[in-house]
Image 1 (tube, rainbow, N blue to C red):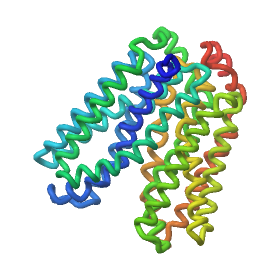
Image 2: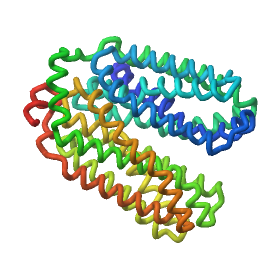
Image 3: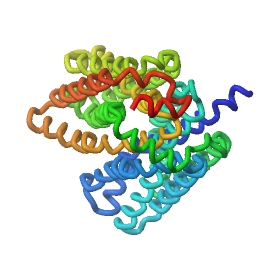
Image 4: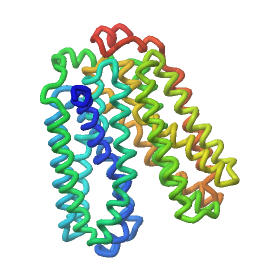
Length: 404
């Protein structure tokens, strides 16, 4: 029982990530009913996922600063209340303008229980075991990917989109509030003084590790976003049915869960070689895309998707883990948050460029090749990280300034 209580914060983080970032995967279910009711095209509604990515990323620097200064439990509860209250308002939207305004408020609320907040909490809570905690939390997104789509489909068949959204909002609000109150400590590790923060701020942005990790992660996460959009049409273009394409993608999801489990199992043991762990994970994903580009049979497609999914899933908790090896835990929220906007140029340009590649060549193979090149660039950035950060920065502020 004591062991279970010890890991309750990580379980609460799992719930927050699964029922926060994991909600993006069910948006596609609502495009058709919203298009029919409000008379707008699917192209216009396709802007909404961009808002889910853009707004939380834009406010991440602010959120990162707040999480290093305010009680994390309070921030999580505020975020959940704003997000689910806005989602409930979405279910009552009489006009498209109302719908858009409430959806923006929903995206804003998500930013306050985003990975920036959850990962900062876990790094401070589990000094020396942060990799396991981060991987446990990241598994929540895999669980959400497996549970939320069929649940959403069932609710839509039993009612309409409004009742489905309201049911999800109330259910998710209840689950998250209970998990946060039960798992997140009311008191966190004390934050340094404002003067210390200002001194650390100047150090953070001067350190090469900040920029190397930031751009490495921006490339890696952007590739995963674009892959999720490319896979279904790519497999359909190869002559496979949507059911078969879904089966291939489920293999990638299971492999991603295995990748996160691997990080939870071994990362803390190789903490002094964190950059090589990141390089290995990226290499696995590059290998998977290479196999996928040459695949001619279902078996080789499964192999390629599995390798790519394993690397992509393992890479998700690698971001905060890398930062925890180079920056003090008291500023980890600010570091994570300040790096998140770096993802925007790649994530926003990736889907249009993939579509342009298909329009030009009638194939998604060039897009997959471009994604492999982007991962190779991320791999080189990871390998360029200095070794001086591989001490124990979580143990004291001196390690932040001594390696500047």
